[in-house]
Image 1 (cartoon, rainbow, N blue to C red):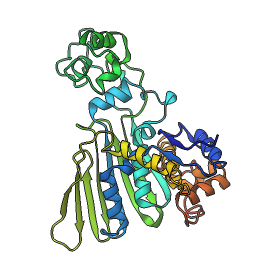
Image 2: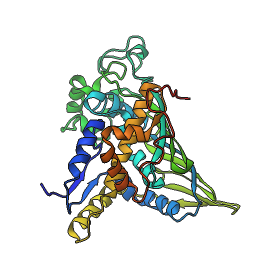
Image 3: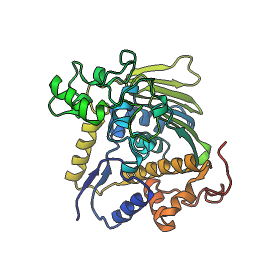
Image 4: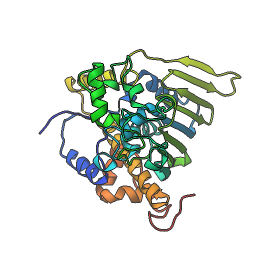
Length: 360
């Protein structure tokens, strides 16, 4: 159609959809094709990227990264809410953490060799329901006073913004109560039809031996992303929600503490910055740079490969997995995401999925 596109994520629910989408983009000429991985545009993570790219901590060696939707966010969105059923959406790792896989891809700017993952749905299951817990929180639950997921406490208080505004367009107490009595958000979290995971770990080996340990958990106290990245000459660590960033260059005896907090809502200011950047790109006469889209697609592939590992119990070779979209298309994606990289790197180094390479 010739349109410029700013695409919301997730881009796809599975590899088949992703392959079809990337194939369709091959006919795009002169079009800006972006994906809404807006954390790249947040002042906080732009600073992190600048520090990594300028080699102030040397070459990256190992990265620890955690994404934690708060316990109440987990219940709202992934147990009672819109993203609770994998078949209707996508795996938890994709719907919640494609942001983080994209950040890691952006920071490292290289493909991965192999990936391994473990995870499960541990808490939000019928067998974990407290004795006597009814189907709905509005039906006289005996443990309502101590349950962290009590819907009446979460949705009938003074807050009428997100996430409360999701349950009813009418935010009066009466309307909200009716929504809890009849809609999905009033259900006991132990009596829902959810099946997505509530925690997962992903281990990735990237080219040049860089290792990543990523944790996604829905049991944390607050919505945030925390990380600790070690390089050959220094260290970066931080808390995105608090705007805290620690930068340590060796052999200096003390680290530099930075405050990059942002009062603007929407992913630390990333939402509005991404939209502004996209509009400026469309208005300009510059040749479209769709590398961000290619890396975003690659980040999704990391997520799908992690799910393959989790379900199969095997370490997954990324080259073999990626070539399921077709060798030629896979090569084009790698070249678009990582210009100058040899697309054949790693292809013979590790066994394929199902070849008996167990997770360790």
